[in-house]
Every structure is written in C-alpha cells, then in structure tokens.
Image (cartoon, rainbow, N blue to C red; front, side):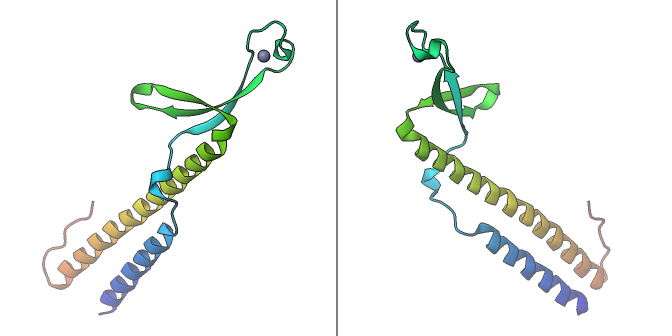
Length: 130
Ligand SMILES: [Zn+2]
C-alpha cells in the first residue's frame, strides 16, 4: 500500500515536470536549424576601403547536413533578425524535446520499477531490471 502511494506520487511528479517542461513554444513553422554568423570579406576592388581595412561584413546562415556537408546562405541585413529569431525558436524547441525526452526516460524506468514491484507483491518472480 505504501509502495502504491509512492508509485502514484512519483508518476504524478514526473507528469507535472513534463507539463512544465513544455511551456509556451514558438510556432513550429518558424524554426530553423543552423547558426547565424558574420564573416568579413574583401570585395577585390583596389579602390574600395576594404582593400586596406577590415573587409565587408557578410552575415550567413550555416547548417550542417548529413554526410558531413554544410550549406551556407548569405543574408542581407534585412533578413538577419528573422533568421536569428527562427534559429532561437529552433533552439527552444530542441531544448524542450531534449528535456521531455529525459523525463520520458525517467517515466519508462519508473513504470518498469512499478511493474516489477507489483509482480513481486503478487508473488510472481521478479525479473531483473536492465
Ligand atoms: Zn570592398
């Protein structure tokens, strides 16, 4: 009986944690995996200030693809805020997916332990947990 209460409490706590972990999420349509970074480039014109100075700032979105490839898209200044927002949204989703996955692993372990205790109580042989 005590164990049963413990099992229920544990389960409720995990489910509460899972609910809290989800929280408010940005629209799934506005996510973008990748990183936004700035590179300085010289345009090659001998008369341009960049020939001597630091070079022009160019912002890119870079994303790694399967097979070790990566794709880069140069971004005009007007698109940088949106790209950054989408990347932040992706990170938020990613964090939530990881957090909920961790909680769900705990739920699986907890369920397994609960079932194993129930089997023990009903007198059946207890299986070893892996
Ligand atoms: Zn230049």
